[in-house]
Length: 286
Image (cartoon, rainbow, N blue to C red; front, top):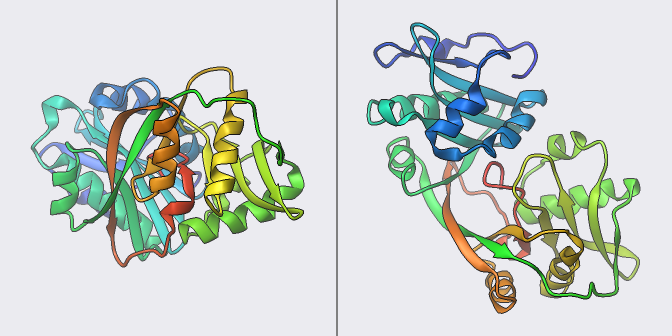
């Protein structure tokens, strides 16, 4: 939980016997969200909103402080993301998911968000529809191993690449996601150079199932994806369906689709370019 959090005004808005509030550090949020359907890997996703001053974890708790749901928030100023929003099966269809959604939107808007974004599963979409979110486009997770060998033009990322990475990310996402990059003590990944400048990168973070892959065009994207053969195991890469080149490359290499999610927004559209997204950080902040 972000330092200095307090019980916010929206915590007074209750479904019978349920309170929405920031999580306490000693509460089993990961176990609750695991039981809500996210699986044990959700503990990795909680690391960023728990430790970042620009993140928050909200919980739905009964009068005895038993957790029945939770949600994560990541604030990037004019934009914000909701992720890992889940409710225990026995408490579904009682409005708890909508309370968590409204509380997360309010928390992000209080920090300046004009647009709140998320990736919805089929089960979660009706909750977001009722909460005023509109649909954009799906993204698909692919599982497989890139072919080798790594192409020329790739190198390990350097500490001096931070500014170039932030610029590429902003041009691709239309967002200012500096808080995420500032939380990384080291840049673990690959860069693709063209004419002495960074034209794309892969970046590993502690908070997702696969690396982020951002490239300014298809040539750079394919080179970076090929470079991921250096990883020691099969990879999961999430690519927007609007990036037809990325899907075609992965499918041609024998990657298999494993699931999909739908990008949705609350507020005006954000000028992002999905054709540059060859691998999302995760389905938490895109």
